[in-house]
Image 1 (cartoon, rainbow, N blue to C red):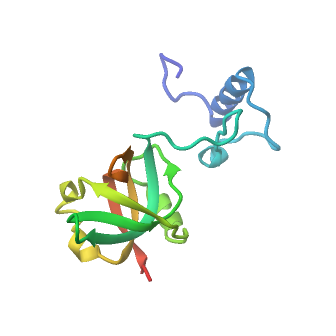
Image 2: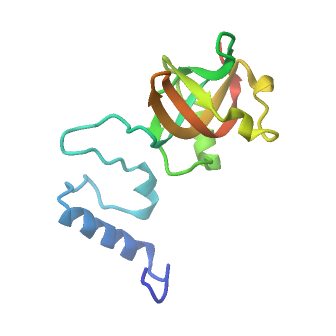
Length: 158
């Protein structure tokens, strides 16, 4: 935008347009002026409060990689609270921020892990703390993640 000259306006102009769109749609004003450097940190919460992340939403989580010996499936244990993302592959800044993120209590079944080979070899990462991006699954098998990205973190799981 604008159509004839994409990305030709200043960050301030784009931010002002966004602020106008939000106000017209009755989003409350924030405590300080909207600026481009803060846009990645803004989270929108519905009028009725936070809602569960919908199935098939793209999410990011941290967890510990294990192989389920009964089902022969890859799982993430001690999974952190899922966060929605826009990226199938995380940005380097997301990877750095994830290293300090706390583990949680959930277990996610991982789907399509073997499709990441040879870039990611799960057998070499058993017991490691991983950053995982993918699409949230909920079905009779439980909670799962259709994996789009796995990356080992510097710290191991305890």
